[in-house]
Amino acid sequence: MNAYTPHRAGRPGGGAATPPPLPAPDPVDGTARRRAPVRLGHFTAGQLGRLCDVAGIDAWQRTAHQRVLTELLGPAATLPVDGPPPSPSFVSDDHTPVEYSLTFPAGAAPVLRVLVDPGFAARSLPDNARTAWAAVGRLAAQWGFGLGELTRLSDLFLPPEPHGPLTLWCALELRPTGPTGVKLYLNPGARGGERAMETVTEAMTRLGHARAFEPVRRHVAARSPEGHGFMFFALDVGPWAEPRVKVYVVHPGATAAAAADAARAVPGACPERVADLCRLVGGDGPFDRLPLVSCYSFTGADTHHPTGHGLHVPVRAYVRDDAEARERAVRLLRRYGVPGEPVDRALAALTVRPLTAGVGLISYLSLVQAGRQAPRITTYFSSEAYRVLPPRQDTAPQGD
Image (tube, rainbow, N blue to C red; front, top):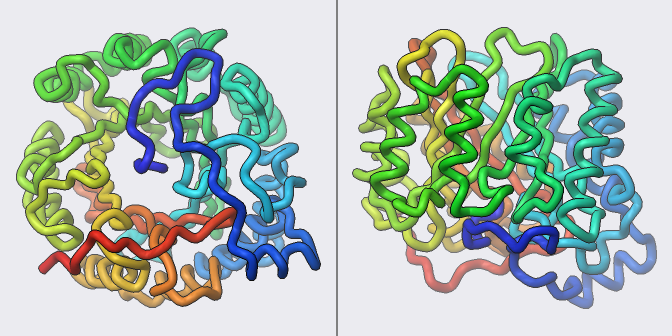
């Protein structure tokens, strides 16, 4: 999730509302890649395969997951990574259309997820949407699951002339056993940022979550009168035991206390845990470099309130480099009784560069609280296929 991009709707039918294309890699990297051009599909499939080892996924499944990733990338998989990306992607700061994450359930092995922008190679948002829809449709047909909910909402999130910065993303939750979970991410501002509240409210009504969504709607309306506070709308599709609808809300310039307050809409969520996460990464705030993001989840288990809350903290904006980000991640995991060794293995699976040489490899840290389940920590990782962002010079070490 590239929160370096101001969260706003791009012009309809045009390019995404993202920063301009990045310059080519530095001369050393460029020389090495000219000798043996590396393709985006090969680069990201290699990373995914090594991350599968971290998550305990066997060789047969690993190969299958790599193949699906390449298929979702479509034409983009054959593009070299030694030049600028063909279009800006909101998935990551360097515009690589792939992001990874590891979730750490209490007492269990980490769960690997990969997020893909299937329309990355398209030159316009309408083409991006058509390409992504086709890719997701092929995956659904191959795996035998329906897209009824997406079809019911297509007029809201996939209009003929969508606004940016994204159209349709697909995430795969990869498990050592059992079927792969599929998540779809949509843009609440697809019909214009000024209609985001209307769009999300209508979607929740159609899906039967209008009453449960009301506390979140009031929270956003009170703090963002223009209704621009929504970042993503997400659907679980396929073989989930309890599929969720998720709404992501941004909190520009929020403090740790304000982030904690946003969790109060969810029964059973502990606001102090939310504040503690904020303080570990960036103190009491305000978090004005990149915004904090709340994720509210909804299931059929409760028709009166959201059933879960997650806070996503963009750690990369509040540390100097990835060595500091890694230290924050390990400290957070240890607070919840989880060893930090898988984080180090994941970092080694993604890159050989020193952690002090850049920032953004670890992009977010999140804490999810849902019902009576134990809190879950997730660490998000960037691919850095196109560029390593330099260490920040405007950040002193923070946190407790």
